[in-house]
Image 1 (cartoon, one colour):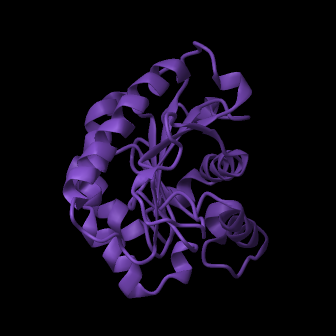
Image 2 (cartoon, one colour; image 1 turned 180 degrees about the horizontal axis):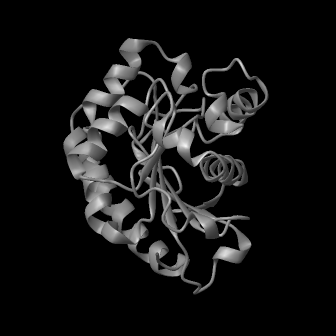
Length: 238
């Protein structure tokens, strides 16, 4: 648990440090073809009621990359410039949906078709309703892409993964926040789950869950799984 303001201070410094590390590592190198030029390592998802000193549970969502933008000048720069805070109501709603699905179907998540949660994922979730937690977004790749990740070919995706080792910033974030994180969420079945599972096992993270992408499209997937009894993930989201 932590407060929004305390996390904002820590993560602002963290973002600047990671950007400097990336600049050094990429000095003299050409950006990947799919990269827009901007990068973002962490985003503190903000909402009006969170910008206070209330101590709240902390959820860290690990996706594939943060955003897409067609305009590019090929210059490496921070996407959000001097801040890490940004509103993302769609991501909050999707996170609420995933957590509520686990609360409703705890046994299915723990013993179902996939091992979807860690043994301590349920700690404190009885209080996580109506956005009553602080959400931090981070990703495997810090690069803002010119198209959505799935629309880039495998070569382009591989270039973005190889040019910057995701373990550098994920390990640093894990070290920075430590026990302050109540839940780690790996979201995005095809691109994220295998990488997230391998990373969190190496770090010894037990308070975790995996789910559909925490976006509008991911919400569609959750809703389809909820209403379709023949969907293989129906027991998790019904």
